[in-house]
Image (tube, helix red, strand yellow):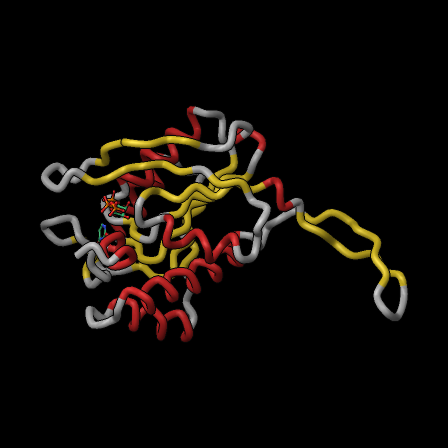
Amino acid sequence: MEPIILNHPLITHKLTILRDKRTGTKEFREIISEISTVLCYEAMKDAKLEDKEIETPICKMQGKKLDEDNYAFIPILRAGTGMLDGLINILPNAKIGHIGLYRNEETLKPVKYYYKVPKDIEKREVIVLDPMLATGGSGIDAISMLKEDGAKKLKFLCIIAAPEGIKKIQEAHPDVQIYCATLDSNLNENGYIVPGLGDAGDRIFGTK
Ligand code: PRP
Ligand code: URA
């Protein structure tokens, strides 16, 4: 499946602030959250709606409602949690799971340290969150764990993707639709996205 890339002047503008190394933690978090909301709107374009009769101040009408309870948001720790409030602001009844993964700095392979997801994950539409899709290792492992638990309908939302990571996820999980705000040039020798924004977790949490 081809990735869906947000190409919008406002997103490009926000990304430039995000990438700038002088941007502080507060503004960085706010923009991650804002872009995540837009990604969520994009990912919900095919959402199923149910009829709901309501009455406006003028007349009765047949409205449409989303089954909010149908969704599970799964941030990959740590950086994925920075995207979460941008989604729960608009879908506050979604269930939330967490997958803890960090990249071994030498091998760049993801190491799992936490896994807790809603118990009826197989019935839900699952939206995995991670701002950076670099080698693709973390995304692939997170999606595999969710599939082992029975998840069938999955989407992957990220802010910046590298072509290498997109290709890897497409090969490993061709059924998963990737949404990203932008597609960058390449990975450097340390597995960082170029030009990227640096270490997303460190910038969200101010740890460096
Ligand atoms: C970052 C990022 C992704 C991963 C992407 O996490 O948030 O999870 O790297 O890289 P990949 O596509 O090559 O797997 P990191 O391991 O730095 O952990 P953190 O979120 O705790 O900082
Ligand atoms: N993880 C990050 O936080 N940034 C990158 O550029 C690559 C992986």
